[in-house]
Length: 438
Image 1 (cartoon, rainbow, N blue to C red):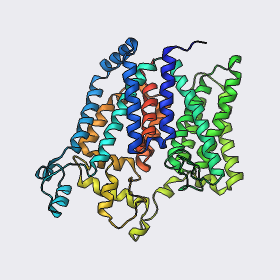
Image 2: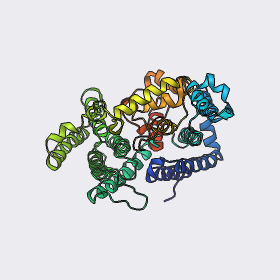
Image 3: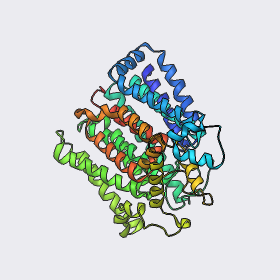
Image 4: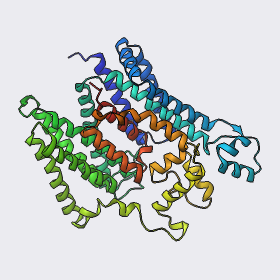
């Protein structure tokens, strides 16, 4: 059986996504650089195809303003790392100017507190733009979208099984898997358990969308439906055993959205799919109730209890809320031009010199951290580049509503949106489920 050129290119893209996942979701400067190289080479390869060029030109013509605003946002990030005369920072970054004058530094400095980290974040945001272009070139029918869904469903199954097996063996470090920080939860290939759960939620949506769109009487796909149901079970187990309260809350939210849609809004009455959704709920409750105790059933969804404990009396017992509060206070000091993408850790260490690095690399609230990193100028630019999507009423379907609910909750209470693979999945799902996809 001969495979078409476009299908081969889609498989190449899937392979690149696999590299993102296996190597910690792309969450390091080294992997960001690797991701950028792989995506850039693949983008240049796709540009050689005339049909792909036409798809890209059509997409650019319809989204010219959004793309130009995003490019201006990238230029702003470059501006943040340029060495500027210290006197310029008196206006651009007064807080940093005060710090520099206190150490008698009067030559040149950038707005960013960590120009190296900010440089790699520029590569990451450029990778996101190239990923959008690639998706518009190689995914242009519903069949192509469902092929992506099947890849995520299958790969989510593999990732979940791997994570759960390592969890059952006490999460030993093995080759590239560094699981020793999470002995009591599944984390798999990722930096932590919540990132695993968020990734698997995208895989779960992919599986459910495939099951929802399979014709009831399609006997040729009987085995395919069995595989998908198995994938759903194992992916759900992976989310449960992550013990991420945000992840499990989003799982509950996802099932609720699908139930509401099937019972009140869906025109195609698929009883088999309703049974699958109800089975996930009962399986979830039984699995947790038997294996972990009935008290865990409610507690695992109550993520605010974990995210907002009472304020600590001393810095040695700093809580997540204290970190969010610190990030909020600092963003007010860098309100217009930010302190540089990826520079939160440096800023934190400057303020808490004798504190450990355990919480130093993120603010535990993506919204607070993004505002601090980009300032109002950067936030305005990146927000305007996406505003067209939100202004089109027809873009709001079941998938986009679920994804936007993820976005809202993660922005407020977690840092998963700083992980490259999660950023890419958000972009892909919103892009391929908008009105103008097919």
